[in-house]
Length: 441
View 1: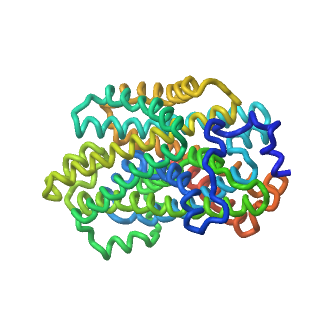
View 2 (view 1 turned 180 degrees about the horizontal axis):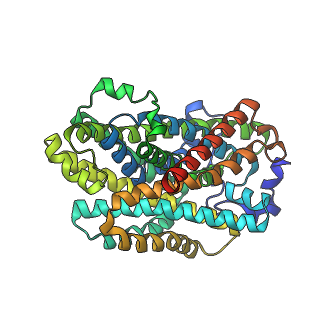
View 3 (view 1 turned 135 degrees about the vertical axis):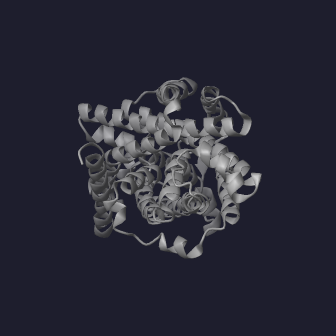
């Protein structure tokens, strides 16, 4: 039953049809050669876990509360590892991405509602990405914010060019930019000289995480920025770029290597997120700059506080790499969501332009209107929106991967099912608490 999805008569249902099963997997190869062949989708997903939205929430959390929110970053990363594993397993086992599965499983009104929620996710995510890229261009090259935002739209043409060459070229670019970000923050940690004892204590949870409303707000923002809802759609699609065997053993092997790929990639994302918060805690929290929430302010303060202009330059370069990386994968996700929910099949460049405009036009309007009110606060708010929207992606994912009719022998076992539903319940509870605190409490 599971294999029927990949038969020729279902060809129109292929996810990312131009890249579907285009990456070959070597037969009878060593473990490491096969891992290399399967590696890539996890890093496309990991980009969303270190985008400029993460920077805003991590900077704010580190500046205000020191190392206390490191536990939240660790917890959200562990949840991300589980959810991305389920997302990859869904795509491999069924041959469908999460958007396609949702469209088929629910009534038309519910499907339209979920599509609208998904588009809001993309807009909120893109808001953070284009703000981050525009701020980086402004800080490094003094390009006006609005012009910088328009420049980010060029990723549509870069994406088309890379995919024409092959999906592996896109993955190579993304991994290279991730290496720049990780290397930059390794240098930032060395320059900021954090205190080891308080840093370790930051991984121990405290009651103030839920009793302090301001800390809870930022914590939900971190979870929204780390466990990215659009990544669940993205991962379930891009794992299908691999041409693995469609029998039980082939899918089992693909799930195993995809899990390793995403876990390694998310470990890098965890390091980057933790590093941003650690640098903010070391540089700002103990120096009387607890109110630093703006990326531009952080950029300007790093040089005098750390005693070298290299700190600010490296910070700006890594922010630009993060923003551009995120716009690439965000555009790809927009295509997946539109095709999956609406089954819209048009020329690739038109489709990419439409999905990009759906995200970037609202972001541009919001940025022009709010730029005088503090872009840092707007970045944090965009991540809270993602946190609130997250259950609408997580709950269907857990339900689908626990359904034996849909997943066959790859359905979640009891332990995974309980853990996944516990994660979904925790996310929903935190979001309800946040909404109550913001609007009622």
